[in-house]
Length: 77
Image (tube, rainbow, N blue to C red):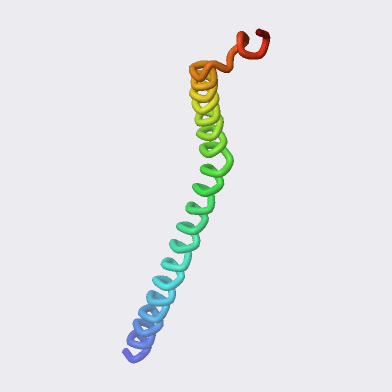
């Protein structure tokens, strides 16, 4: 009988080790997922948003440029 009690103790210590290992692996996967999300934002979303914002800004700036009176007639006479 004492042998079975010892094996139960071994199982409980292994279970806590597995729990610690599982939490460490879960934390590692979470950090990897965050890194992939940061890469997605920096490589795909930010350049797309910057391109869109730049085009919107240039249209607004050109319309304001013409509204002030700096069109072709100003420069060409």
